[in-house]
Length: 265
Image (tube, rainbow, N blue to C red; front, side, top):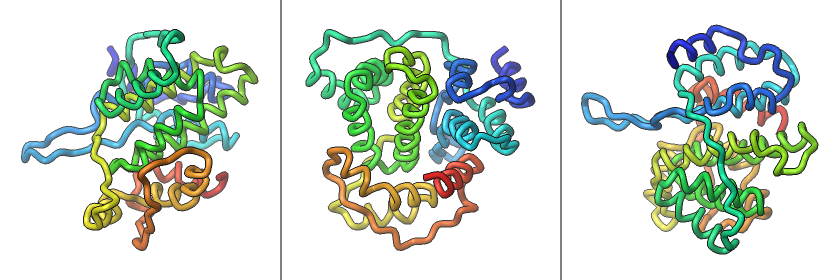
């Protein structure tokens, strides 16, 4: 049943009769995540999966304010790789102290506790958006998984887009913001959690040579200084990228994200 529904999404115009990013989120809510972000093949080799970029691509589609057939095709195809979760409202945790909220959110990501991360992250974003993204940037900038940094960068912009489109207070747009929170935090807690060691030159070189791609490099080079100036980023040293990466090695989704940054950032 779900497979048939996803196949229908692949074949249809997923943006038909949708006026903005907020409407897109509500129409396809609970449908933006993959079940797993890595698998093992017959030779016992671990294969990592790229996260779903449906939300990011939809954000770009409406930001460009024009028909983009390539984004339509890619988003339709990505729905084949996602599943529809049961509707579950994220309850407020308004009684928890701020210090415990921050510590609990930070620990839940590290311990890969997706349910707690989403609940605590939702409450923290409601109370202090800056602290929420500060924690995500601190994690993503020490992660060997470049997609965490990419997802954080776009999540920050998507939440602002929702606020502007609806011209409303945060508690009035939570049904849309919740989808962004669930998407990024479920990826953080269900994907690889290997960290950089800035004191180990070999470890850093391996990361730069084998994990970094052209999209990560572009976002990092153009925004690192702005991020550390805006947020309290700890235990991170600025990386210098001497290597030139091939744009053609990016997935089709990441190529669109790259071009958007190139034109609109």
